[in-house]
Amino acid sequence: MANLPEDYRLRLGKMGDRYLLINFLTRTYEEFFPEQKNLSHLADTVRQFFCLDTPLWIVEGQQTAIACLWMGSAVDQVTGDRYGHIFLIYVDPQHRRQGIATALIDRAKDWAKSRGQTRIGLQVFINNDNALNLYQNLGFQTRSLLMLKNI
Image: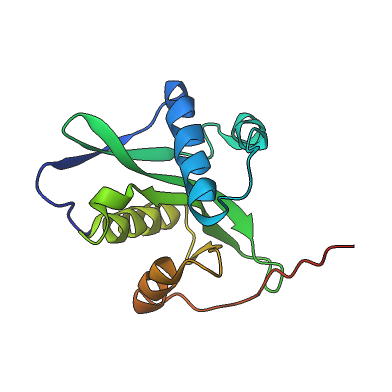
């Protein structure tokens, strides 16, 4: 696993960290969809899916949570194989470009391997150029595009 920069530490989240997960999820959507004023449904998503089978890791710096990785499993609908799915990877903007996301991706790979899975996957917003570049540099390949149309 890639090492975190000095002064940061990774810890396994617990159910009491639900509020942190909701906060990081909300901050992600606020960053890329500032026009969306009501994001209360994100708390419902966390209530529905956050459990022991969908672990959360928290990165702390100076005793403050600054990043997270939320994992689960999914099924590749082409092959039927299970793979590690990254529900959320978030790094506070002031702490980006220091290798934290890369270390979290390595943690995701380790978790998936420990479950006998041979791949990891994620979804990324098309307007998140920094994340797209990171994932491509780490070897991720585009497999599908989600397309929506207002009706």
